[in-house]
Image 1 (cartoon, rainbow, N blue to C red):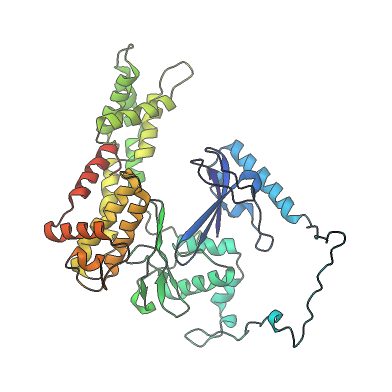
Image 2: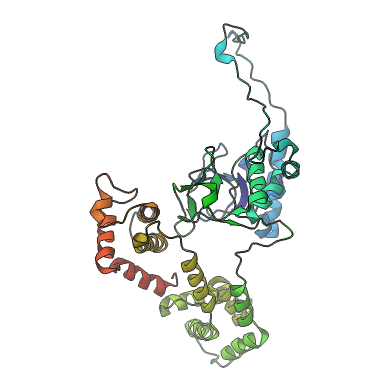
Length: 448
């Protein structure tokens, strides 16, 4: 379970704190994300509707994104959290029966009340594969002595599953230190975990491109999965962090480059229109290597928005500030190309090599449908395509036609008539015309 605080991006989410009202766009809200085997469930609360769990508790330092808020919003959040703590600590009044009503008597424990007998769980000592009792294992003791917040720091750094109680989290950390951290699911790039059967399973992943949870049924023996070095907070950094994008951005934002940006705007006529300034900003940004949208109209709109955001009190534009904002938001073209190459290299592969192109096409279609929102039901369409791509990767036979996997005994999850036609096109031509169209639109809009 993870708590965070932030600004509501829309007015669609309802408060789960008891009032049931919608949370207005731009309002501060608390968010609770709970990971399960299949998906991540997120609920939101008004700032003043937060209810702190009485048994598990919640500390403000465990709430994510607080430091990203403005000073004023941070103060509001801290005050609301303190009020929630007071409500949680206040003694609850016991409900009394109305006058004239009888209070039901408690059932007596005994032979005749089997329905209220609770069986206690066995407290047998558990042994690991080496035969050492876990209670006597120094590694187990080390993690048992940590708080949940400290344990989750280890799991976050090692990109492991965060869900569960301390009794669930400690074994994950012990397994990671003894055997190495589990690498992402080879089918969907989700987080792997040990199941009760002793196998390694994946419950799916949250796809940020379409903002949806995508289920996955991958399962393998522990010896068949890839493991990496177990990372320690405060000592190691995430191994997959790429500093090339930051280095490229710093190179563009050098003092010499920023001086050239200012000079380019100083050469414009005093009577230049806001559109002229936006066009010049696009020209300068592209020349410097900023990853501007390919479509000129869209690029000018982005530049214009950046200029408006950096308009001084005297009505003049802060060109360098507008340039820096574009650089922060869009990054560099070189970094974007490297990111694409890395993503292609890390892309999950199909179990059967001949199905790999089909899975890749369906996955990219799902991503672009979710980003561009081309259809009315784009969320359902994108999720179905993503689900179908995972099913194709897991498929243990060569797909020979779309009909083979869209109907009958070999039907795959998420594959219907429309997806079957896409599969037929890919098998026949090695490409997908609709995907090419979406790629062009994404490039024009700077979403590629």
